[in-house]
Length: 238
Image (cartoon, rainbow, N blue to C red):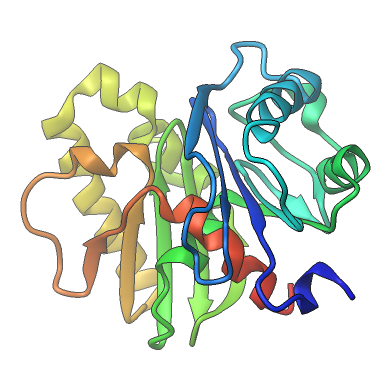
């Protein structure tokens, strides 16, 4: 019997970020069964160093039946293609296979904004998820199903700069919260016209800096959804 077929499989949910790595084991309802842990992402964030941090935390979680991992870059069939906020050695690294061999468990790896979306999406029409952290992540859902992990972060946005260059952590630190919020409203206007979504969810570690009113169809979603979405990643057809 596979981990997906178990009555109540325990999922080791991992959220790899440019700043921090989070991990906890969850039951099928999404209830934490282990210790919610966070460690700083290594400065030289190579696969070996990131996996070593994950292993240090995983040892404290006890038993689990399967793994779900969100990664900040383009991921296809478990293979990392880009990792703009980590290390160049991630290119073409099979993260899914590495975790499977390490723990001898079934593994699913997806873009971190996609996993955030699994935790945030309510299954009501077309839903756009944006994660605001070290960089900028994005994913699109339709009726609760993942349509695509988008790469809007590196698309042109304003005055020759990309969305990530204007709304990432470096821009927030340099320009300040007020200017960052102004740019975010401009970006939201663009996204609304581009996707004509029904709902917009804004998550990630820097969503806490959002000030003022948002459009009626937009709301802030807890960053922890990047962990809790791991269970629903296993429920989808992947």
